[in-house]
Image (cartoon, rainbow, N blue to C red; front, top):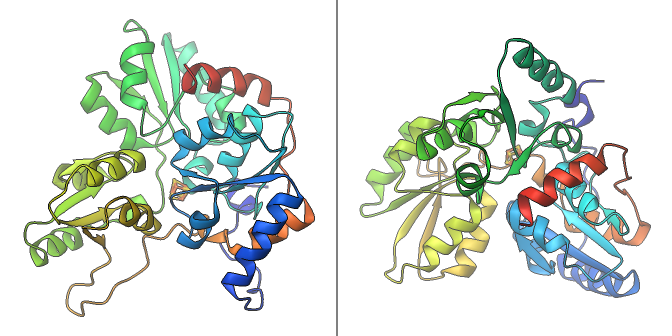
Length: 334
Ligand code: SF4
C-alpha cells in the first residue's frame, strides 16, 4: 500500500453536531479519569489548542512530551508527531485522535526509497551525513544522523555536522535550499515539499501587501524560495510567535503558513492584525481556506473526546523506534 493510501485526504462522513462547550467539559473530565495530558500543534483548530496542556511547534512539543507527568498522552497533530512522542516516552500510552492524520511532506520520503538513495550515494563515493527535518516517519528518522526542526535547523547544522562531511537533507527541498543559504553549506536535497506551503502564490501575497500598506510578511521556511525572498521575516512557528510579541506598535502581519497559526499569534500579540496569505482573493476581498492542512484538520474536539474515552487509536512501539530514539535524543535534547 502506498503512503498516500495510508493517509487518504477524503474523510469519513461527518459526525453529528455536538456542542463544543459540552465536548470541552467532557474532555476535561476524561483527562482526569484517564490520567491524560493533551499536546496540540499550532496548526490544529484553536478550540483544541485552548483545551490542550501543551501547545507548540514540533520542537517544543517533542521536548514537552518528555516532561509530561501523566501516564497517557493525547497528541493532537499528525502521525509523525505522535510517533515522536511515543519514541521519547516508551512507557507511556500515546493516543492520536485520527490515525489517518498524515503529512504530505513526510509521505514524500518513504524509508525504502531513502535507503536506496543513501546506498547509491555511498557507492558513488559520497561521504555524507543525513539531516532530516522532523516531518518524517520514524522509519525514516531511524536511517538518519540528525533530526532538525525549522526552529533549530540552522544552529544544529552549524554546530554539529562536521564541515568535512557532505549533507543529504530530507525531505523538504525548500527548507533545505533556505538552510543552504543561511549556513553556506552545500547540500544534496531530497525533492519533497509540503502541500500547504507549496501553494502560496507570490502574486496574491504581493497584492495583499499592497492592500495593507506598512504590513510585514511572515513566512515559514517550508515556503518556496520566491515567497521567502519577498518576506520580511522567515522563521518556524515558535520564532514567528516570539517575533510578533516583540513588536509593540500595532502592525498588520501577512501570514504565510497554515492558517490556524493565527490563533496563537493573536494570543501572543493581540495588538496586531493578522491576515492569512493567500487568503485575500484579488478582486472580491473574500478569504479562502486553501492554506489549511487537511491532515491537521482531521483533529476535531469529537475525535479528541473519543480517543480519550476509548483509549485508541494508539501508537504502538515498532522495532525501528529504538534507533530513531537515539537520533532524536542527541538532536533535540542536547
Ligand atoms: S502543514 Fe504540511 S508539513 Fe505540516 S503537517 Fe500539514 S502537510 Fe505536513
